[in-house]
Image 1: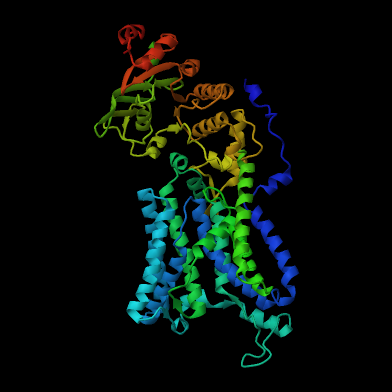
Image 2 (image 1 turned 180 degrees about the horizontal axis):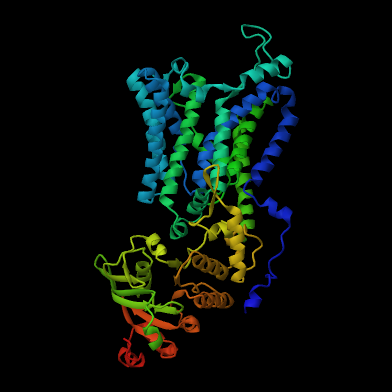
Length: 371
Length: 264
C-alpha cells in the first residue's frame, strides 16, 4: 500500500517549466504591459509620449494608481475591500489643508495628525467589518459617503468654500512637506539637460533648466510602497498570513493565524496609502478640494484585478497590481497623446477589466486544478 | 486494559459539561486517551462530538469539568493554549487553504524565519525542503513544494494536515471526520496515515460516524449520544452491530451495557 502511494499518479500530466512559469498572478499584468506599450509606441511615438515630459506625465499618473493599488492589493488578498479609498483621499487632503493653512499649524504636525486620523479610520473600518461580520463592501461603502460628506462639510463650515489653497506656501521649508512634495536628483537632471539628452526650456525665466527637473517624491513613494508590499507579501511570515486570511479565514484561524489582526492592519495600510496619495497631491497642487479622489477606489481595485488578484481574496501579487497601475496610467495618458477621444478611455478600461478577470479565472483554474 | 492502566493517560477529560444557553450540549462526558492509541469517538449528528473536541482543542471553554494533560490540570483559553500542550486538531473541511502552496500551508502559523539585516524573513528554502521531506515520508508525491494544495485530492490534503500537526509536535491528534467526504481509496490512505502516526507514539482521537472506518483502525471506541457517553470499549470487545446500535440512540441500551463488559 505504501509502495503504491509513492508511484506518481499516472493521471497527472507532467507540466513543462514554460507552462509552470506562465502560472503566475502577474501573467496578465506582464502581457498587458507589453501589449499596451507596443500599441502606444505604434500609435503615439511621434506625439511626445516618450519624450522626457511625456514619460514623466504617464509615470506620475501610473505612480498615483500604484500607491493606492498596493494598499488595495494587500487588502484584497487578505479577503477584504475598501471602497472608501477615494473619499479618504479627499478627506485626508482636506484635513492637511485645514490643519496647515486654516489653523496655521506647522505642516509636519498637520501631516502627522492627518495620517493618525486616517489610519484610525482605516482601523475602524476593519474593526466594524470583523466585529459585525458584515461584508467590507457595505461597511466601506458607508464610509465612502461619510468621509465625502465631511470633506465637503468641513471646509464649507470653516472657510465657506470647498477648495482650500495656500498649502505649498505653508509647507515651504517644512521637512515633512518635502518628503511628499520635493523632487529627487535635480542636479542629475540638470546635468542631462546640459548635455542635451533631455529637453530644456529655451526661453523665459527658466531658460536652460530642464523641462523635467527631477523625480517627484510621488514616484519615489510609489516605488517604495510597491517594494515594501512585495517583500511583505512574499518574503515574510506576515505575508503568509495575509494569503491565508483571504484564502480561508477559518482554516487560517485553526492554524493559529491572527486573522482579525491581519485584516485590520491591512485596512490601516490601505488608509495609509490613501493618505500618502492625498499628501503628495496637495503638495503638488498646493490646494485641497472637496472633490479630490473621486472614483479612485474603483481605479485601485481595477488595477489590482488587472494585476491578477482574485476578487475573492487569497491570491494575487503586488508586482501585478503595480503593472496594472502602469497599464492604467499609460492607457489613460496615451490615449490623450494619441489624440483619441478621451471618453473612449472608459470603453477601453471596461474591456481590459473584463479581459483581465477572464484571464485570471483561467489561471486560477490551472493552479488549483479545478474544472 | 491492564497494561494501559499503569500508563498515565496523555489527556483525560473529566466530567465535561457544556451548556449553550438553555441547550445542554454535553452532560458530563469523561474520556481517557493514551499515547500510541487510536481512540474513536463515535456518535450521530448532534451527539455532541463537535462540542467535545472543541473543548479538548480549546475552541470552547467547558461550563464544567476538568482537562488533565499528563497528570496536570489545564485550562485552555484558546486553540493556541491547546496546541502548546501538544493537542492539534485536523478539521473536516477547513484543514488547508487551496490557493496556497503545500509548503506555505504546511508551515502556516509556524513559519520558519531567518534574519537578514535584523529583519525577520520567511525562510522559504527551509520550509520547502522540510515539506518535501515530510511529504515523501507520508508517501505523497509532489510536483514541487510550490504546488497548490487545491491540486491535491481530499485524502492527500488530510494527510498533509496530519503530517503537519505531527511535525509541529502534536502528541494528541484530533481528526474531525477526516474520512467523511472521501472515496474508498482515499479513505484507506488516511487510515494508513493514522496507523503511521500512531506507531510514532501519537495519540489519535478519530471522530467519525462511520463504524467501519472506526473499526478499521480504532483501539478503543467511545460512543456519544445526546451529550452523554455510553462508555468506552476496547477493540475486540464490541461488534459493529453493537456500535451501530449505540450510536443510533440506545434503544437496546440495557443489553448493550452488558456487552460493553462493565466499562460503562
